[in-house]
Length: 261
Image (cartoon, rainbow, N blue to C red; front, top):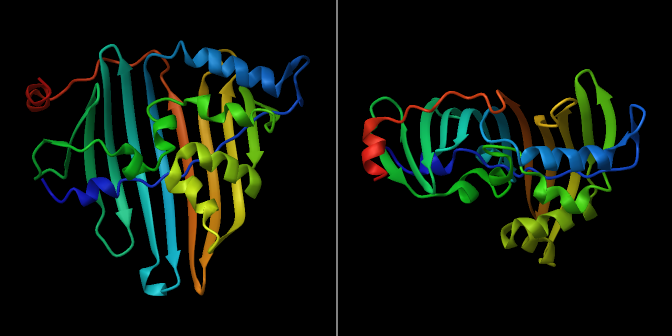
């Protein structure tokens, strides 16, 4: 198997959150109503297909270190048995694109990158690899992380459902980051650093009839200053969910079935 660094590069998500206001949807539902119904519906979601388009810009002071990484991830999940199958195309500045394929069976992760690479078990690094928020959107959209922000949502009807949006302030981002752990929350405790927030925009789209989440969009643009150094990070995420409770059984390669025993 090629270097595990390729797996560790597969996605740096800092998806941040949304909440709810009392804006009316249609004749009766409020944003809080939609949020609560979406949480309730999520408990009924057993199988789903998802697509994640992710773009991450990392721009430190040295222009030669500026790097853009794009991830195109197809994901299929079944809960009985608990299997997640992902295929991804990774494109990065200055490098040839490469493909990665992953299977998660219960709490074990198996993968390979490219046709010439063999299957093997890899460290379970979803938090380090994809960013701490990734576990909340993959394989399904887990709204528990957003509970403290549901009074901040704005609600708008869309063609087939509802759109919950939030333009997060720096103060809201600081509060949210505490939930992601010391890696992010601790940055606000560093008196030597200053965080400039340009954009923190989020949208969750919900189906009108099922209240399943169909889309998640995020745009963050921040710059951290430490002394004379600065580091800009811009992240765009577009996630779509479909085939709710209507996914065919995942065919796991025999090599992985043997490794998982």
